[in-house]
Length: 162
Image 1 (tube, rainbow, N blue to C red):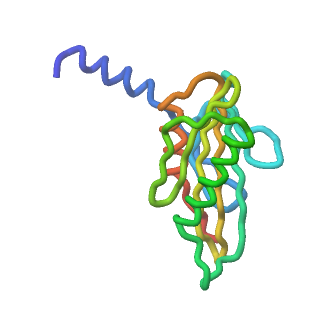
Image 2: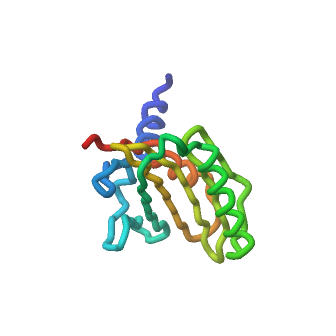
Image 3: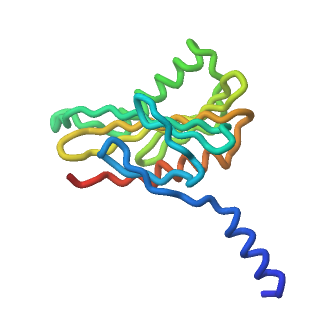
């Protein structure tokens, strides 16, 4: 390690996003960037300082059905069908970055002058299935860093216990 590596490490740490923990509908917690400000709406919404990013969360809850459990395959099928409607009926342009992991489905779209990033997942809590939808809208072109930010927010979900 040379003398200039000290300054390099410091600058890299200063550029890393800082996060704050937010409670959503008294059901779960997520981490969002510190510079995002929540604003009044019918659901959770936040905007960044430059107003170039608008983030919203929608939750749907229903009773768990032990005879017909909700699976990742069902989440994928429903979400992929919805994404197809975005394209055929809404005129969205899909970006080739779709991702389906062991607990979420993600896809970005070009819509007019913005890029919209969608993240769908579900959690079980106290006999309920909670379907969670994150939508992040950003002015301008697609950015892999924005995708990674949304995936990190999704990865931070922690359901609250009672």
